[in-house]
Length: 168
Image 1 (spheres, rainbow, N blue to C red):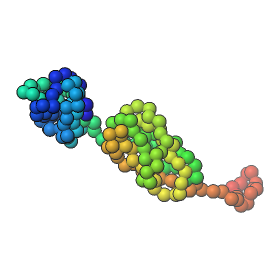
Image 2: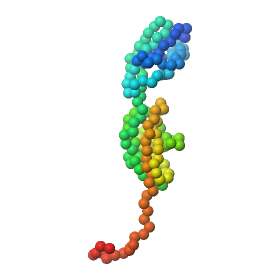
Image 3: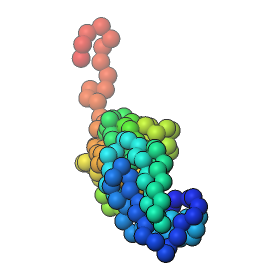
Image 4: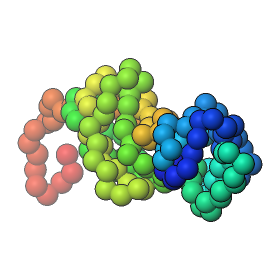
């Protein structure tokens, strides 16, 4: 993370923490900018930033929000014909700049409707399960699955004629 402010110096120790959890690889970039890597935190909550540098302590409440991983609640439809592109609605939570990726690393075309809904264009492919992940821009991801099936085919009706007043 980058933290803007003023009066930072690289001539004194620097300590950054979020609700008591120390940031790593902290550095004074300039007198107006410091940086560090956030630790693991409590997803879904805000944390207070505490900066200690050159004998000063500064706090900024609700400075950082740990995003929870995306969740998948439902994929509608969850199955479709194998020989065509299938459009589906993915519903869940915490979709933050999401990308949907198949288990081969290919991006599945999608459109984000909100932070809890995406439309997907699931490519055609062989019959059977098709595994994917919804992955947020921060790298957190959650698996989901679609099932492709071969549609039934019709070739003939025998007999192809019959009386209209009795079952055939």
